[in-house]
Length: 258
Image 1 (cartoon, one colour):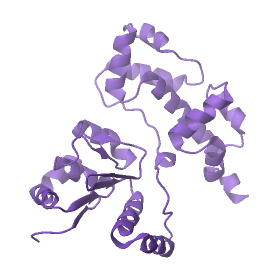
Image 2: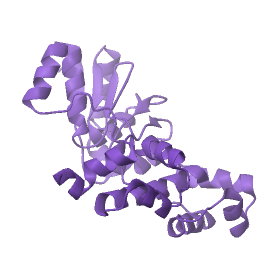
Image 3: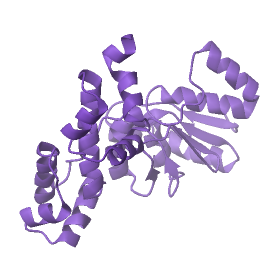
Image 4: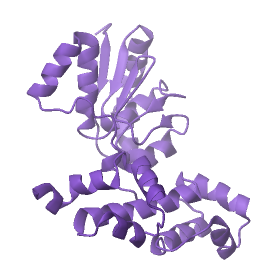
């Protein structure tokens, strides 16, 4: 095909370096189509192929949260957004993981065929047309695929002691690293600041408790080391895009069956 209006890159699976190598011949064609006026969309981890074209350099991109760390390592010049369902920038679209691709497809249906058709499609295929975040689905697993041993040990300390108050100064002193240097190395190794990492570990523990226990919001809050209800709710919603009560009602088996 010499020219098209829209290129859709499907989800791909397997070792990403091998997948990219196997699809290398498509890269010049995708670039040519974009420069000729076509729009380009990637579904889920099809973002790896799209990023290989260089068209995402400096732009925002979504992909499956499970592949986010690998994507950041391979494409550091792309602004990956873990929580987004859809990104759109200069005629380039990306979507979050798995069924998030359906939301991007609806978005494109609305753009090319109108809102009425998008709503009809969402009803026929039973897709939530307004879903905009994949945050509630993310399972936080601290990035430990690095060679900074003191930082890895500090991650393990946080994960084993999140119920207690942990400070940056405490960790820096424990691993004999100056505070500023420790913070710089932690961010470089994990992709999170120390405070963000502590928050994510606490909230992941809270999520698991909400999913499986009968404990109320305050009990879970205290269990993970929060004393301030307002702060707990604010951080929980920032990370999951849901309030603690909304999350519990959505994922707790007993709450769902009520």
